[in-house]
Image 1 (tube, one colour):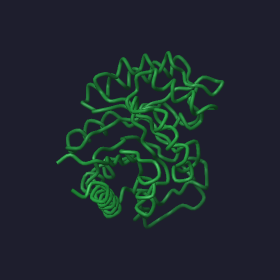
Image 2 (cartoon, helix red, strand yellow):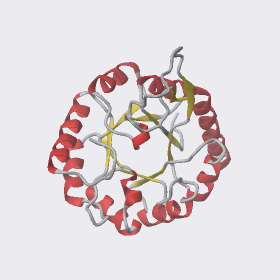
Image 3 (tube, rainbow, N blue to C red):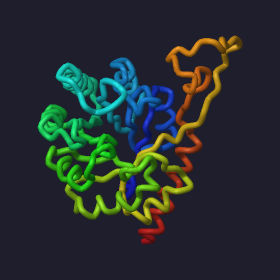
Image 4 (cartoon, helix red, strand yellow):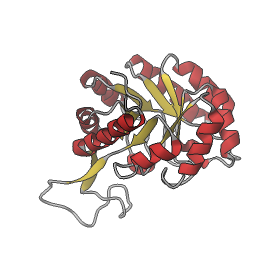
Amino acid sequence: MAYQYTLEVCVDSLESALAAQEGGADRIELCTNLYEGGTTPSAAVIEMARQYLDLKIHVMIRPRGGDFLYSELEFEIMKREIKLAKKLKADGVVFGILNEDGTVDISRTKELVKLSKPMTVTFHRAFDMTRDPYKALEDVIQTGADILLTSGMMNEAPTGAWMITALIERAKGRIRIMPGAGINKDNIKDMINITGAQEYHLTGASVVKSTMKYKNPKVFMGGIPEIPEYERSVTDVVRIKSLISSLREAELKNNPS
């Protein structure tokens, strides 16, 4: 059965990917290092995800955290990662490149889009760091990307819902606009009613505590005390099922026949 709304779950481990599938997600955005906004997962994770998952897998192509202004070496890494994702049978890839003036790097993004085909291409929330969202929208469309992931230029999509709505109206079907960041079971129906978007991106995660008996309080492996060493976020099957339920309820409401 074809559904009206698509749920993409952002995961940073095979454990979370399996939970997303069990919960009923339509596809995953597979990455690592969510504390940095997501970077490219290892080849082994991509390979095993393809082995164990039946849903669609879109792989993050991002060589590092930080900004989206990449050197030639980093650009070469991105090209090789795309080739590897294709070889490992990913369904799509996710990336974004900006110029130093806060505009979309059209030429290099076009090159990556061409290299990615026939995989689906998502231009990610690098978009939300651009200086002019309406120009950036036209630039992303020009690159040939299939999906634009955005929080509406705000930290969370519900706050930027008005901008997302405006982007969808301006896009006129030339690209799929997917709201992401801060979406949950309590606001996803409102996002549907406000924006009319067909695809939604979220983590649906819960915090899992470490089972370590001994914990050294003086050492932080990343050097940053604010990042917890003895807990991690894992996709929550119950949360995903609840979100799917909300989407299906919205479908019945909008299409009662």
